[in-house]
Length: 454
Image (cartoon, rainbow, N blue to C red; front, side, top):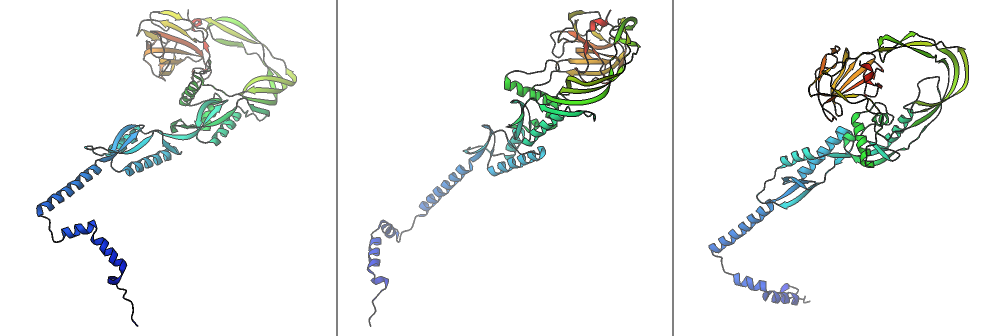
């Protein structure tokens, strides 16, 4: 039996393909080049063109760098953006670990590939610029009182801690006091915000600020700036200079105690003691009574008291007090000077104008408890005289130090106009001592200084 010839030479399809290839343009070029060789010079030219093109292309690619920008301001050029991204990641992690909270950059950081011929990359310069200029912020919760911002805490749970600590801030420690009711007049809430990690405070600090207890002055200033930016003004307590908003914790207590009945006081004059001072000639004696009270307080301060029952045990005896009429203090400005403003209203002392660098004298012997500088007071000095403090503000220079004992009439400073002052003068105050420590400006009540001079 004869088998059909299936070889490629006999396939009609292959034959058509060969014919089509034979007359194609590629086939023509192949036939033209067959048996020909390129001259060496032509080959060299082609090689040079090819190499030159590669070098130009490589230079073009190498001239592309990544511009590092912070909020649109260029701070450096780098070739590998991954180094910058890793540096930012490490810097963010380190800062987050330091502040114990998740942080992220406040500025917008961009890495854009640009054609920058003739310029060199410098990764260290870019890193140093990022390290110096980059600021981090954190997600926080702004504590608000009736919608007014106070200061931020790190988590929403701390807002609840602020409420709890505020309500407990004025709780009585007397075991005989029965707490009937307690309520917070204002609404303390939280709002999400982003702030610098240095501006995040603890629940204890914010509770102390809101309840007018001891607080960080920086927290007070930060809270006041927030309120000013929110309301367009500085909301301050006129008496104590404390930032508002404040909170008001109202409580009702019930207590039964043995209470002394206050005795009456009879006053007499005596020239043997200084004016503004007094001494007890006859101590008197309180009466005693058993009283059951229902007391209403606001922020620990008693607002009302209702006696449920009362029984007198002993009657009180009057006390006799002698008031001094003798003047005490020496004039605090050498050469006299003149009074330009007197004690009144919110001006808690007297202003005595004189030439700059006039000697300021100690009004009485005592111990210096403050020799410092304040934003409003300028250079100032506070001297403890036992029952009173004398205060000297706006000095050009202090000549004594805290802890130093001074004598009546001793030169302690040079008159000036530092701090918030309208001209060279001494602002002189007398404040009644409310304890052994100075403590602060509003701890001790001010007294008209003019009653202490002849």
